[in-house]
Image (cartoon, rainbow, N blue to C red; front, side, top):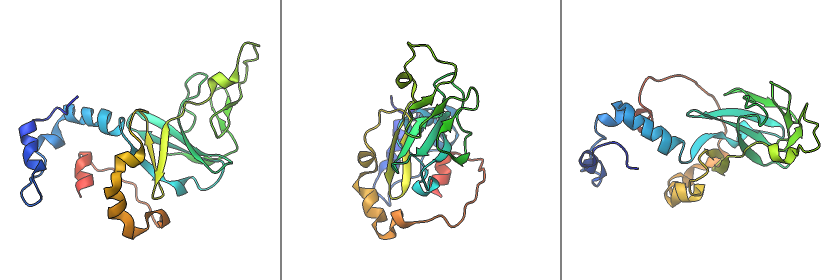
Length: 203
């Protein structure tokens, strides 16, 4: 599905540098276009959700949001970072608050105390002792996750091409001199800007 924006208006944007123009005004004000972007750009492709250092050690858990979808990130004992939909497989309760970080040996649902291993397997299904119940069928649902330059990327649709295909060689070339994987966080500011997301990217 094509973006709901006039193709002729985009033609000037695609001209060579020095002849190209900014996006048309509707690209920043159209609610219909924003809805398309949230579905196809944010929910449909790879989105950076933080640094690998946000999960510094085994047991680390972090809740993040990608539009309306919440994701739980974990680092298991094997050192691997994994991502799951932030939903308990029992009654669908949120497992960790969005933006919340904690360290624990298991993921524990606050509703009925079902617990999961950091690799997503169901460890303790309380009140489900029926012989026919198989815990292996009720693990956390994984999301696609990958790492580049110390940044973590998630694709909640599960249908995007691999991260390397998405970023391409141009990103590697552009960032080669900066040692992205060696960067550490020195400070953090959180604030809300009442503007279309593309204005923030452009600035």
